[in-house]
Length: 312
Image (cartoon, rainbow, N blue to C red; front, side, top):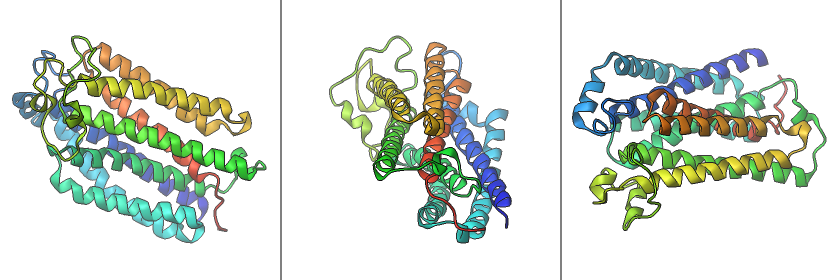
């Protein structure tokens, strides 16, 4: 198989992974009641979830998710088998991780949807991991070296680049996890009338992935769920600042993918503001999730692009 064919196969897998992430987010958020009417009274209600399950949109999304997930498993396995001999140790590790995450998501799918936060966290972070690992493999499978990989590099520069990518990746993982907790705790409407409670007595329970229940069930307080929103918003702003700080520290000839990460995060922040301003618009929240996935993918290229592939 030529490098071009492998690249196309990995791109197909990447597109399928994006569909999986987008469809999964849409199904979860629709069931919760994001975008329902009358807002926010309809949010988190059993009747809203039941109505969503029978809507044409949800049925279409469920079919798209199943077809994409099944196709993805086959395409990913084929890409790993055909690309294995071309890759070096780092890319091979990413390939093995790709198959393991795929298997984990397939297994956890039997328990989805679930009121247990851990299941939702595995689904969200697992979907983002697919995008990360595929971007890594795409970068490692490129024949023509990029400016970043072809320019002379020092050991100090390589350490900085790797550490910056890891910091961004950890920040994005935490941001994705906090967003998932807002969803699983049914706290999407917590700030519909204002958001000023960063801390509530016992709110640490909202972060426990092994403790089921909505925010209102866990905290008997009118502002329940607001701490999750404020944590997500403030940490998201901090992550964006860090991303642009990394770009400013990067030599201009090497800044393509750090800039892609920062711009995806900037667009994600904008869609988050739109979602908060227009009472939880479903399309804005899903776009917010997809932009996070693209930011993670850009970090994957940063990680994978520094390692050249084996010969064809």
